[in-house]
Structures are given as C-alpha cells and as structure tokens.
Image (cartoon, rainbow, N blue to C red; front, top):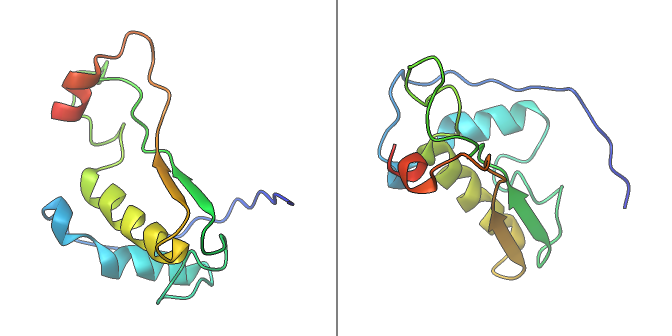
Length: 116
C-alpha cells in the first residue's frame, strides 16, 4: 500500500446552521468531494475497495472549549459525521469495517462531549 499525502482541501458552501443529523449534508459534502475529482455517486470507492476498512476521526478530543465558546470549532458536527459515514458505508458495499474513533485527552469527559 502506498500512502500519498496531498494538501488539497475542498470547500462547499452550505447554510449557516446544520440540519438534523439524519437529514445529512449530502449535496455540499458530495460537491466538496467531487471538487477533489472523486465520483459524486460513490466518492470513496476510488479510495477503498468494497469489503475494506475505513476509519473516520471526528475530533472527539475535549469536552469543553478553553476559550468558553461552543464546541463547533473543535469537533466534527454530527451531521457531517453522519453524512461521511453513510458515504463510506456505500463504498464498502455492505462488507468490510467502518470505524469511528478518536483519542480524547485523558481529561476529556466523554459523556459531556457527546451531550454537547
């Protein structure tokens, strides 16, 4: 396996507020991935084979913002996470493994982080 690090970033404009996580953010997420040259119908298929393994790191690091603000700038919003996980599962073709995980700081209170 060869790993190539590419500093490319794709951005898609959306509304200033996230919808319910189950509604997803498919149009802007797919537009951003298509902007990277990935297939809009199955953007992760070119990156992982059906039956492979995908790990998503959602930035679950700390339960509070040390500046006293909300966590929006520190963690991946559940709506984005849900959308990316759905697209990743599509690429796996009903087989393989999808892991959502992180390595929070030891001082992180996970129950507070997940409730935020």
